Length: 350
Image 1 (tube, rainbow, N blue to C red):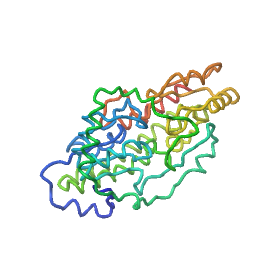
Image 2 (cartoon, rainbow, N blue to C red):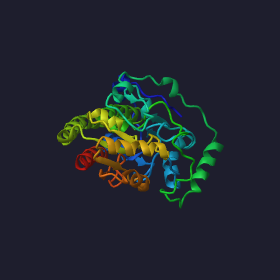
Image 3 (tube, rainbow, N blue to C red):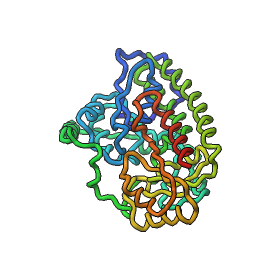
Image 4 (cartoon, rainbow, N blue to C red):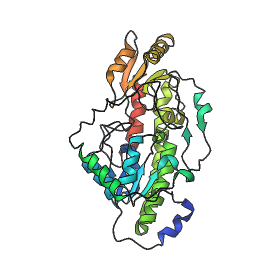
């Protein structure tokens, strides 16, 4: 399995390369990434979606059809193990022989550090931002995997055919013992990152399918222009409520906050969505009370009872914000609609 990202400087040479007989089979992990890949592949082919938009990517069990999509893929695009650590084994075993692209490892990705505290300050983003490009070559090297491992993983996925996507609460999560990487993995919520990934996706597809390289790069260019227009639209939606005070369910939105200069006041849960401790809940309740927080944003993927506990005794409004597009049709329009709907939900809640 190849895990090296293709340098964009050689993409021109690919256009004149030897054409493949078939369009490559492509798989993407979450719906927003699937949407970006689908936009680049528009008119050529359609990628498979691995994790349904209604499921939390932090914890999930693959169904046999989803495991099969990974097994059959020629290319796999995913955020990376920081978002879905449980998926690392599946990618390594089921995707043996595929070209795997972890978008967090792309040189063009701007990364933000995890925030550990329940309460945020406006300057936190500046302190944690890493605006320079990151070289991830040392993490991009894949290693060979035995066929026995592949068969074992596929068999494990078959055991979960009838598994309820919402029934993942039996893992041992707690606020003081969560484990994650150094960087916040919710990087798709920065339209600038998504814009850069379009070219990464086009380059990888073109390497596998030189015959359609022109279409891939033309689609990526058009989508980048659409992303610029989307950012302007979202800024106009949020502008009347600039400075509004809100709290989110889990700390997944700082890329969106940075992109539109609209910082949250805090998060009920940390970035990996581990259940919050009573002390953390008390901190958030005090912030809502003491600073006049007017909006608490819930998510469709997580337990609404925790939010109800936080809201008890306050007059804050609630809204349901969805960073994955659980109610949207997967495809080319999902990514811009996710970003647009987040802005509308926030503005309406404030």
